Image 1 (cartoon, rainbow, N blue to C red):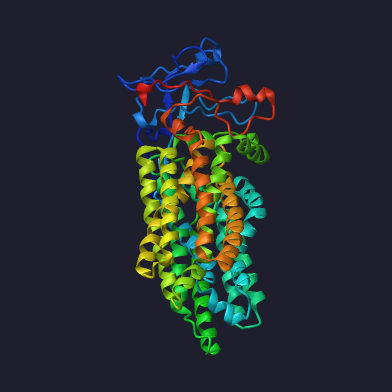
Image 2 (spheres, rainbow, N blue to C red):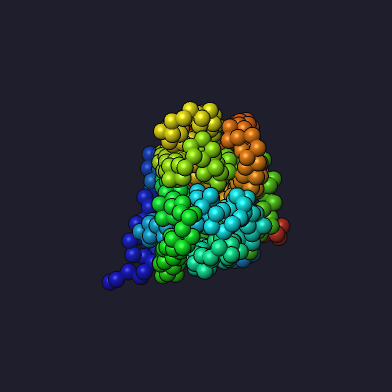
Length: 555
């Protein structure tokens, strides 16, 4: 018989047979708890049964008569299904149930579509700045006007991130994706009507819409990775999602100098070239919006990991967006990460925005090579992102990896700064690639580290706050570095960034690493697992999942 659409290509995770969608766990555990053991293996983490003693009638009626079912070592978490309302019986009629987890083949399609429309959005961010001198001449505006076509992305993000993350948490992934892809498409089409020298305000309007679309895009990589991908591939999936945005920046560095060469003496030809770039972007954005409408789903039929199963089984009434934000700002490690991520990513935004001005200061007439240097910077960063994601999935050494990449990014920035004026542009290609490998490779590290230390808070909320910090630092750094570059030269502007990155290294070293999501997936925790504390004190005791800390030999 044919499977429903949501079940096609679904693979059941190890240790979770599909019978009835749940795996029974024996009820003959110590009072108030239930435990499960692998055959001849260590004991998994224990879960409180809503405070009901094993000796009570309820607990006795829940005992299993059948044999114990062994679980795979990596899937030993005993996730208790929660009642939806106070006083409602749990689903465990014949014993404690462990939610079924499975991996859907659709996850790769969702990741691909998101990466592609994120690519187009990033392309539109940088397409003006990399040929800033061309657009300055075409629209007869100052360099600051062109810089604002890039900085509007950063400016729009800060006030809109809170309603955007609220929408993601309350209305879901699909609607957020449709808004991101749709606004990106609309902004691209508006720009097509701005190819006249007196219509700079129209191109700014289109860019503003694209910047609003970005708010619904940048916070999704870690959310998509967590909702759709298993624990052994979540970091790689997040890195791949971020990769799409980086690739868009790379294409934005490469194509505009080729499609719109500097032909200031022929305004009609210049307008034709700009029009070709705008219409081509609009066509691709429209295709991707259609694909998003058709193929983008909210979530798979079954959660891909025990961490997601725990969150999805929590009653919706317990979640509060305001409390989630408050919890995040009370989390000192996350606040430190918020600052350090903002510094690193803001420095990257500033360098990307001002790269054309920096290169042309030392290598006049090298607009095409400036774009190629930007391309090299981002392509090297894409490789760094994937390698970092694979490394995290393999080692789970989040803090050590983040700190190491931060230090190497600082070293790369210093080398880039003091080799710009050597007169050999090939050296700039090499140092730019080195800088991009570590600086851009840091982006998915920050996302994943934040999800780990803030679990079970929403991935979209933590990622959104990280990006908001990046936009704020990006605006400040771009304005400050741009002023220093024009007044004192590129070296002074770059040294300014180096000083801030050194501060970021110190703050990163102070972050306490508590891998909460990883511990849940391994069946280890030393605290209560709740997204937000229940409003009602009477509900709190019955809806709290308690897990005892597993012995180190079981890790």
